[in-house]
Image (cartoon, rainbow over all chains, first blue to last red; front, top):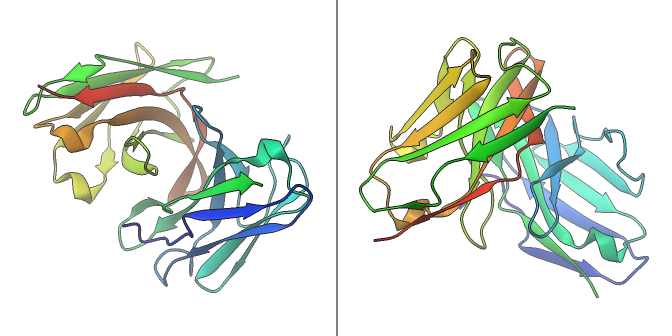
Length: 110
Length: 123
């Protein structure tokens, strides 16, 4: 069971908005940047959002991130079939002195 | 463009030691800008940080692995390696190696990943 809590699944129809939450604590999300990874089936993860809300080059602007207190969120606007994937939040934990991954959320396009 | 490639046996016996190597192409492991990391993913489950090694040889690992992990780096071969001792079926997973970039001095995140290698622990 991960220290960072994500819902196991989320879904929506094409064009809808989907939001994924990531809940942590005062030693991790509360004091450090959050990153989001997308893992398409059978592939390695790739960075989707860095430093809470920044999109690396090549990431569509329908993906956005936010952070408030000890929680963070990833939003997908205008959901598309190619967005079906697993999404993981990631941050540093000061107590662990190491990184943490959330448990992951599987997004399904209905 | 930096690329990473994992190599090692796909099968390990329970109680034995698992050894994996990650070769880095298009970049150097001999850099203070990065940590070199291992992340694993059991079948059907999420990502778990295994450990990370710095170019100096300093390493950190996930405490949940109870000191079974040893990490090393070979700057002459541009490779880094993972050794996991006393493996059990719970260590069956896809093992990814990754470059971890340091936006600040005290933390890092994985920005370039290998494709992963499947390791099965079975007798």
